[in-house]
Image (cartoon, rainbow, N blue to C red; front, side, top):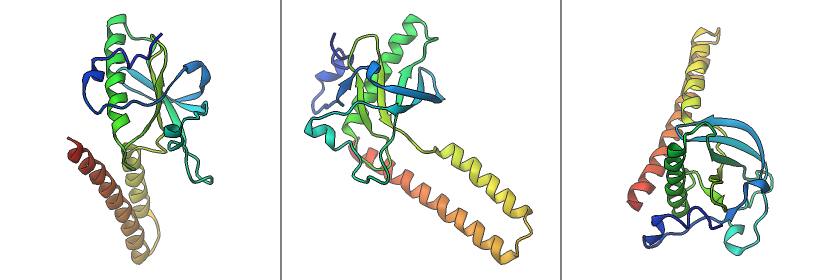
Length: 182
């Protein structure tokens, strides 16, 4: 049973590298974090350790801040034909993520090692931009309604604006990197 990625025509392209493969039975899964067109993303409680040199770079060098990962799987409610499209989508995503290396772009840890068991193990995001935008909006509403002095309100709003600007800089850095990769 070969890796589902190995069955893809994507391997015909030059300079393609792929993440290590593993079996889903070796991964202890937690709660659902999100859902999309083809996939569910779930937290990972426990992940097998890889021993090859290339895999060591995936481990965090910061012991106080260990890297966390999420499991992206095909949804169970997909029809057979839609599941095939979803598997192809995961293949393309695995290929793309395996050649990208940027601090503001999600990294891939591993992928499925058996046919009909399609998944990716990806870096877990602590939050996402749409949630942060709602959070910032709520904080700004709170600041407006608060009984703080004008100077305190101004400082609080400036802090939020600096945070938002930093987020924009991180996004633009990721997009610039992708643009350079073409």
